Image (cartoon, rainbow over all chains, first blue to last red; front, side, top):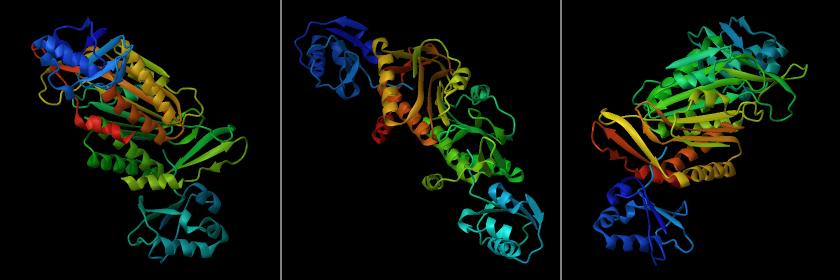
Length: 81
Length: 81
Length: 148
Length: 148
C-alpha cells in the first residue's frame, strides 16, 4: 500500500511517502503497526486525536476498512482557507 | 415645513416636494391633515402601514414629534440593495 | 471607510481589488454585489432607482459606522447607484475587511440587510413602454433585520 | 463551476469582475478572499502552504458540488494557492452567484467553513531563519461545520 504523510507528520517521520506491506484491516491498525516499527513513527503518531486520514484520496475514519485501498494518507487536521 | 414625497407616494400626489403650513404635532397628524385636504393625498396615504417617514433626514415613527423639524419625507418601504 | 452614492457605473473588479490592500491585519475580505436581474417575465427593459439625495449618504455612513461598532473591521465600503440601469448592470456593492472570516461575512450580511430596508432607495421595473412597476418591499427583508 | 489549485498568484479583481457576468438570473454575487496576515508577532516572513496534489482538486470540486445541491446557485468558483506566499498576498478566493443574497452569502460561508477544515491544505508560518511553525487547527473552525 502507498502511504503518504503531510505537514508535521511528514517532517517527524522524515518521509513524504513510502510503500508498506501490511495486513492491517483499518487505518488505525496500520498506524499502530507503524508506531511499533520505529520511534519516529511513534513520535509522529503519538496523539491519535491530532491525526486525520484519507483513503484513496477521500477523508475517512480511523476505523474505516483498508480493503481494496491503494493509497492511504496520514496528516494533521487541515488548515486551508 | 418642507414636505418631500418619494416613489409611488410622489407619483400619486403628483409632487416631489412642497412647503406646508401646519400645526400638526406628529408625522401621523400631518398625514391625516393632508389626507383631508385633497383626494390625491387621501389615495397616497390610504394605507398607513405602507408608509414610512423621515424627519430631518432620519427615519422616524408616525408618532415622532414634529417640534423643530424643518423637513419631513413620506415614502413607501425602502427597496435598496 | 468609503461610501459613495452615484449615478455612474462603478468598476467593481478594480474597487474590489484595491479594497483592503496594504492593511497587514486584514485576513479576510468579503464583497457583495447586487445585479439588476429580471426573474419573472424577462421583458424588463430597465430598472429605475430613486433615492433621497439629502439623506442617502448620511444613512449609508451611519450603517457603516454601526457595522464598525458591532464587528472589528479594518475597512468598510459601500457604493450604491441610482438612476436608470439596464439588466445585468451592477446596482451596488459592499465590501468588508476583517481579521477573521466570520466578522467579514457577518458585517457584509448585516449591511445588506440594512441597505435593503433602511436606506432611502426605491426601485421601479420598466417593462416595454409602460410607466413601470414599483418593486414591493418584502416581509422577509424586514424580518431579516431581527437577527441583528 | 470553476475550481483551481495553483502555485501562481491569481488576479482577484479580474476574476471577481468576470464571475457571474452575462448570467441574467444572477442578482447577487458574494466573494471571499483570504489574505496572508501576521497578527501575533509581525516578524513572519512567509507562509508556506502544503497540499495533497492527488486529492485537493477533487475535494474542492466535491465541496462546490455540495454547495450547489444545498443552495440554488448560478455559479461557484474556488481558487486556492499552495507554495510560498508573502504577507499581504491572497491565499484563496471563493465566489458564489445566486438569485438572492442569502443563498450567495450562505453558500460562500459554507464553502469557507469546509475549506478551512476539510480541504487538504496545511499552513506553516516562517519567521526569520527558523524552520517555521505549523498553524494549528482551531476548535472553533471544526465547530463551525456543525451549523451546516
